[in-house]
Length: 210
Image 1 (cartoon, helix red, strand yellow):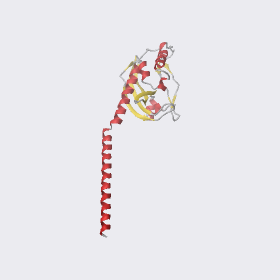
Image 2: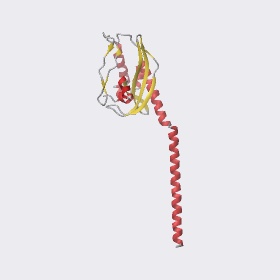
Image 3: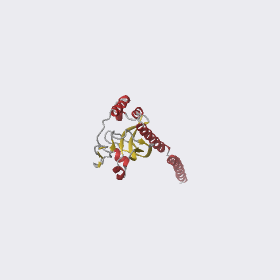
Image 4: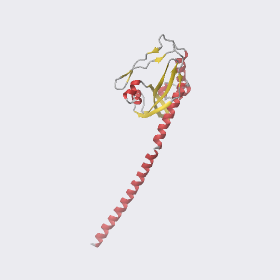
């Protein structure tokens, strides 16, 4: 009987020691996870870099630095080499054809759910060649799912003020950023319509149009 009691005691002691080791290991892991959550370095760094990249892209676009714009796009969005992309911008802006009216009417856009977005009227070349543009701000971001040919990525809203001789306002775009070789690239850019903001999720609504 004594031998049996000793054996049971030894087993209980070993089990208690093993449990203590397991608990200590879980505590160590939990502590590490809590520190990671508190620092949140990876998440914040990714978001901060996306906001910075989106701001730089829109600044290049506003400054008509087409070489930089094309370098910051994905291969799919460039639809060719960087040189071909740059040449496309020069073709589009070399000899604009003046229109009779002061406004242009682009076709309506369609959201993924089938609802339409009323087009925002924009100036044509019959008015001043370019508006005075204010500084670019990146004002929000969120993860976005794939849509059509566009892969999943980070959606970032950018905005800036514009001033014409008789009009002024705020222009807003949403950029779809994706990672290529560890670096951000722009794969999509959509104008934010007033109805997108009224819909409650302008970043997702703008990037999920068909």
